Each structure stands twice: as structure tokens, then as C-alpha cells.
Image 1 (cartoon, rainbow, N blue to C red):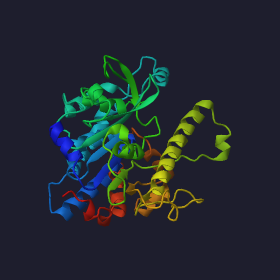
Image 2 (cartoon, rainbow, N blue to C red):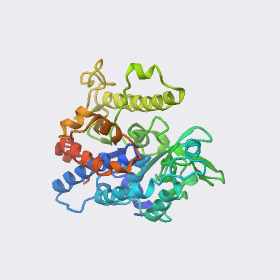
Image 3 (tube, one colour):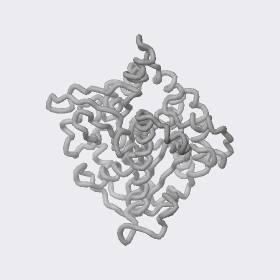
Image 4 (cartoon, helix red, strand yellow):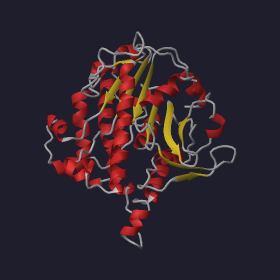
Length: 378
């Protein structure tokens, strides 16, 4: 699709559909379970057996592993392609670094070699740029620029403010920048992000936007990105898909003995969890949502609360808590140690189980009525 064709699609009248995909490493297989179910529902309702999500969604955005999935979907791949990719990706991409100093080297350097994942991204994305005509829909990728401390929202939108600066960025490098999780992989240096300026990027999950749903809504509606799509529950459908949520709770006795290093890891995880819950609160407050969940015991699902007199968007959120009770409700009986292991972003031993969890969670949560015909493309 040429940029002129993309511009035409983005300017089509009628309701718009947004798809936001969380970060979470190999837990992206959980995301793919939900997406496969959505794709199946849309194929059955439209009678189009070859429909892909790029035929339905107008703007797709992701962070980290979500950036990989978003990019491949924007290129028109069916979810089955991505599922096969992820089931092989982990074993190829998460190759532990070997250090001469052993444990000391692993403590000071990245845990995984970046070369295999970069080779995979080059293989699948080739020499495309961020504004490649192969991209069939609007694409948003979130990364953090470490040398300026700013969050970069990289898009292929022809009319946005920094289009001329960013249009020639290699697509594989943009995706790699969003997946450069600190301690897992080395940061990514892009030698020219515009006007000959270099930049260092780390994973977009090191921000408030590991769940990029609110940022994607900003891209769709705010003046800075030039789309300015109108708000309204019958005008904007935002679908947000997670990778499995978890919050490690430690016994009080153990917390009293925590080292500074242990606190750093635990508090970072808690801050990411809180950021996601804050984002979920805001989106439920401004939307009509058949998937609204309980935020906490104080405010519940916000069913009787709203910012403004009417809903601003229709909103869907699909996620599964990676904890024993929630998994048991899906018919998955795991011991406590196994449940904790499933939360790891890079453990290739979890691939098949994460795939299974995603499919079962999707079957329980994703309903045909969540995607009303009123939002179909004409």
C-alpha cells in the first residue's frame, strides 16, 4: 500500500478501530491467543475466510513484544504466522550471553545476545523503513530514548509533525529499539534519527506505556499526530490486549530481610503494575466497556462513574492474571512455583504453556458481540 493509499484509508469517513498490544517478552503468545480468537470471529461474521486484522483495524500500536506483533499485523500477516514465529522465536532470540567472568559478567552485562533477535528482525522486515508502502494500516511503536529521557512514539502517519525526520528509519531498527529491555538486551543505537543526530533507545516498557492503549488513543485523536479522529462510543473502538498480568507478593517476614538489589527489582515491577492499573482506570472512566474489570475494592469497575456526560470511546481490554486462582478457572491447575515461573518474559520452557493459556483465556473472554457490525469497514 503506497503512502497515498494509506492516507486515503486513514481519512475514510466512518468509525475507526484501534488495536493496542502490551509488552511482555515471550508472554506475547498470550496476546496471540486473544488475537487469533478476534480474527476468527471477524472472519466468521464477514464471511471472509482470509481476513486479517489489518483489514479491520485502522491503527495498530505496540510496545516491546507488542511492537513486533503490531508491525507484522500492519504488514498484513495472519495471526497464525505470528504464532508460528513466536513458538520458534524464543529459542532463537533468547540466547544467553557467555561471559569470561561468568556470574560477574552476567551481573554487569546484558543477559542475552542481541545478534539473534536482530537477525530475526532483519529476516522478517528486510530493508523496509518506518513508512514502507507495505504497511497497510497506521502503525505506532513506543520506545524510550535513553540519552534524552523522553518517550518516543514512532508512527508511519504521513501528515504528522516529524514525518520527514523519521520516514527513513529502518523498520527493523525501530522495532529493535522498542524491544531493548534493560538487563535483557543491550540498548539500541540508531545513528541518524533525523538531521544526522544519533540516539540511544531502550525498551518502550521502561515508561508509562508498556500498555500503549492510552498513547494510541492520543495518536488517534490529538492534534500533534494530525489524525484528529472524532471521539464517541460509536466512532472509536479501542481494543487493548495484554500479555498476562502478575504481581509478586512476598511474605512480610521475607520483605523485612530484602536487600537493596531485591527491592529495586520488586519496586520496578510494582510501578509497572500500577501504571497499567492507572491507565485502565482512566480508559474505563471515559468509555463504554463490556470488558470492564474491578480496579480495586474501593472503586470497583467504575460502572457508575464517568468523566464527562457520555462515553468518549468503546473500549475492550483482554488480559489474564497469571495467578493460581485465575488459571484454575480456565481449567489449568499449576503449583505455586510453576505459576511464578510463567510470569518470566524470557523462559523458553514456558512457550507451549503460554500458548495454551492464551487460547483458553481468549475462548473465555472474547465474544462476537464485542465487535458490533456498526464498526465494520464499509
